[in-house]
Structures are given as C-alpha cells and as structure tokens.
Image (tube, one colour):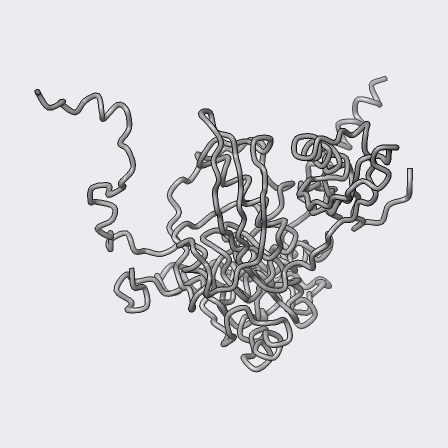
Length: 240
Length: 197
C-alpha cells in the first residue's frame, strides 16, 4: 500500500478514481481510450514476411483493445490471436478541453433484424468523448449495445461540412438559450441527507415565466415517425 | 424561438461569455465563464483567475448569473483572463447579494467554536436592538434593565465585524443572564446522594 496524498489520482482498472479531501468522496469516471494496435500473422515457411496491419480501437483499457483487435483480424484477415503477433500498442492521447470540435463517425451496428451503417456527428472536445457520446446515443435511440457496434471511421469535421442538424446549430454562430430548470441539490454528494423531515420540492422555477407558455406545449405532436402501437390499434381502419 | 426579443421574459442565457456559478462538484461555490456551448446539456467553461480549470461541465451543475463577459465563442484561457480583469468580475461579483452570500457561507463554514460563540452573541445583540426599535415603534413599554456594575467582557465589534455583516453594534451588558444552573443542580444532587452513602 502506497502512502497517498490528499488529492492523489489513482487509476483502478478502467476507472479513474479521484479521491477528494472532504470525506474521501470517490468519483469513478469510466474513460474511453483510443489505442493504435499494430499486428501481423506469425511468419511461416510459406509466408516469411506477413502483411502488417494497423488499427485504431476505442476501448476502456489495453486488454479489451487487444481483444477487439484480434477479433477484427480474425474476421477480416483470417489471422487468429494464436497465429499472430501483436507488434505494438500505443495509446493515442488527445489534449482535452481546449476547443469544441465536431467529430463525424461511420458506424456499423447490428440491430435485431440486421446490420446497418450509420453516419453520426457529435460535438465534443476529444475524439474519445465523442465516441462515448455515440455509444450512449446508440444505446438510447436504437437499443444497440457496445458489443454490437463497430466504429468504421472517425474524423474531425470542419464547420462547413457538418451534416447533422444539432452539431450544425451549435457550431455556427452564437448559440443562446435560457436554463429552464433550477436544480437544487447539496454541492457535495457527502452532504446529501439520507433521510429528510421535509417533503421534496418538485417545482423549482429558474425564471418566473410560466405565464408565457409557448404554443409548443399545447399543440399536437408533429413527428413524422410511426405512432405508437396503442394509438394505431385505436384508429379505425378503412373499410375496403 | 427568438429569445433575444425579450418576449419570453428570460434574462439569463447560456451563451459564450456568460458568467456561471458552479453549484455542484469539486468546483462548487466558484464562478466561471462559459467559453463555448457544446450541446443542450454541456458547456465548455473556464475561470482563469477564479480557480476553475478549463473543463467541460454539465448545465445541471450550473446556475447562471447576471453578468456577461465579452468574449468570442470558444475563447482561449488568456482571452478570458483579460476580459475578466477588464470587466472587474471578481469585484462586481463580491458586490452582489449572491456573491456576498457565497462569501459569508464560506466564512461561516470555517469558523472555530469560539468564533461561532462570538457570532451568536453578536446576533443576540443585534436582535435586541432590532426588537427594541420595533417595540418603540409600536408604542409598547420597553423594560428597563438593571445595570449591574460588574466588569463585563465587552466584545470589540471591530475585531469580529468581518465575521458577520458590515454593521457594528453597541456592546450591551448581559450580566443579568447567568450561566445555566442545570450543572449546579446536578452537582448538588450527586453530592446529596453521595452523602447518604
């Protein structure tokens, strides 16, 4: 056991655990890392100079990165881990938080009925951050878990070439919007009371603007997507 | 929705240059400047002379203040630093009610036991004066207190004024208040019980 300072950062497996001075509150941040893996099949008599392959993989640690690398090598190049050798594994470290960029990525994922390609764009400060967003986005929108997603390509997209609406809006011009929700909570998790004598306050207004209800709240939904199955059943079918 | 026309009554916006107060997390209690908006939920934030590193922070951890510092979108740390000093942000923040509250809360949390006692006494003195004024205004009789000429330990308001608000109060004699006698009672009871044995 090493002697720890108060603010020492400790890496525990995939999680970067930062211990705080006050009450040793721990915040675990699962970070995605970008690795560059270089490997080839083992040289044989038939093939003394096998072709070297290089791949960029997003993974929480090197173990998973290597595993995925050999997974792809096996499926695409017919080289197994047992028949191959990993020449090098480097982490591609990006300097974070200097500027916000838009990252575009081509993704292949497996849905319940087949394989689909997607092009997605995210605003973030680092590639890994954008890729994390993508995983969360895919899970939320398409119920696609991490295992079913292959990242084909990632790149940084200049502002003029952004295709998707949300990154485009936030990238161009000065974005300006109010914060509608006021969140009242103790500043440190440690101060959060386990039991309270008061009933919870649910209605905290940031601004006193409830009298200015916008029409969006009152109007009909305008989505083009399929209506829910329940509503579909309720709708009378045309006789013919 | 065009917020800038002021039709919807919003006055504080998430925008590049907006000064935000961090509610939650390790930097709570500090103010920072929004350098850039990432998306609906997150902003890139920087506070060069304010003790906040350049970082991505969730909008759920932030409360917007009235101040906006003039910086371009995605401004670098140095740019923000000069803008903050030109604007006089730290001073302006200290003069606001909100900023004052934050500062006093921070001070209060770091007081030691004796200082807390001093604060309590000052509060009592203040409330006495306030209640006196109220009573006089409402026309009620004010009780005349017997001033016992004992050596009273008078708290110097100048020494402790930094602990509470800016007002200084006239020290008031509190010698008519004695120490709680429960301790004395306990001791005598114990003494009696011991005597029996």
